[in-house]
Image (cartoon, rainbow, N blue to C red; front, side, top):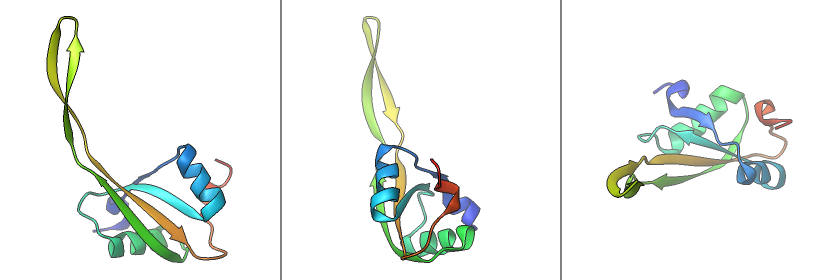
Length: 99
């Protein structure tokens, strides 16, 4: 897989900003079939940085009930896969600067 297929989009949230500032980590939504080695190579190739470690979190799809007036209808919450990438000392991704 090409790195454009592995890295779907960056995770920009309060937790993502905290990790970037305090722990030199960035978070991405990644393809569900990718592994840690592929994610590491994709980040290094895409941004030209050195990756120290990769941690992966998988959320499985879930079923839930949604109320529509008096009716309760089944619905689905999609799953996703996130990667928390720890960068080596001195490495920065300019894309996230100023966010």
